[in-house]
Length: 153
Image 1: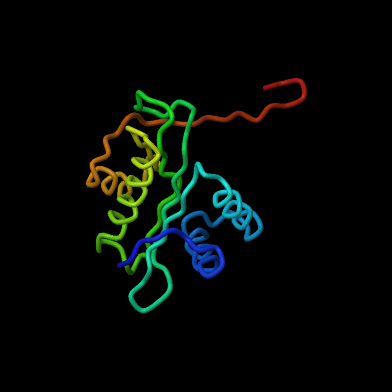
Image 2: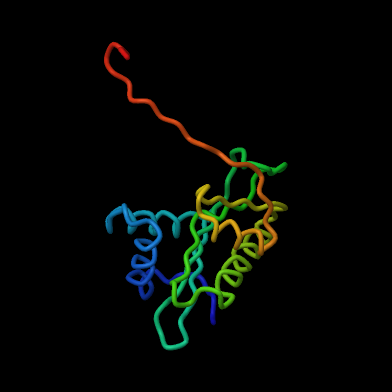
């Protein structure tokens, strides 16, 4: 399988399809704006994997993070923001190839560390990260509370 940088002209529809599979709550307008912003910013890269018969089967979005990244001692670092492989193509090394492309991009940027995240209950992603040499740096639980005008209970 060939991993390469995304081509916004020829890959947009396939990239959108996969992005909706990963994050179904977005909109075409939002995701198109995201892609435009990522491609215009040297601190981002988007990699895709081609299917042998044509089309795409995976993507990885990586950014430069200047803020604190859990478990990292340096700044800036590369950060795996989004990672997806079509279900029929999983367990074939595509995720590993995408991560390798992202890691190489980070090395070329001069970064000595890279971070990533996933949901607490996404055991498949946790196992995949660990298989790629990533170590759990921490686990977060996020809270929210709805406030009223007088903050009455």
